Length: 178
Image 1 (tube, one colour):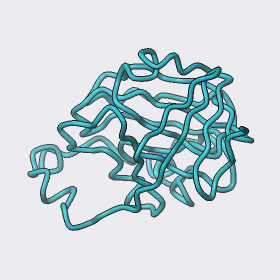
Image 2 (tube, rainbow, N blue to C red):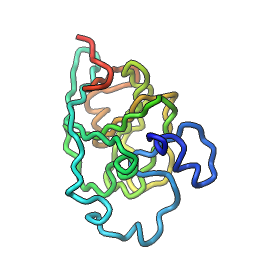
Image 3 (cartoon, rainbow, N blue to C red):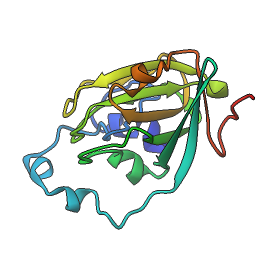
């Protein structure tokens, strides 16, 4: 996450994992019962609209296009896809990371399974955490420094044949070669 994109939230726990990032939820502390039971509308207000961009994944000769929300602020990145009850097959959320660093995401308060696509320099997919179980606090780590993490509906990466080594592009990010 920006400053908290990296280490800020983990620093609150006293952990020293360089460059960690929280996507679906900030890894700041275990959820309190109040946080866990608060209505979704209170924790993810519908009036907070995120910018939507087109993200393209080039996998072999195939191009997969996703309408993607951009989580760019610390609050947006902390909230991520928490409390969402569904995610369309052609939708996603991207978490830009500047400067590039290793990233760590978890599924706190995220009620749907997700594929987490860790994107390295030049838009190359470093690794994919597939069909990640909802509502877990297990950390999912990048295989190296990333410029972004892209989350899509759980199982979609496998359905579309998206693999490490494929390329991801978006406006303001790396281009997809023609």
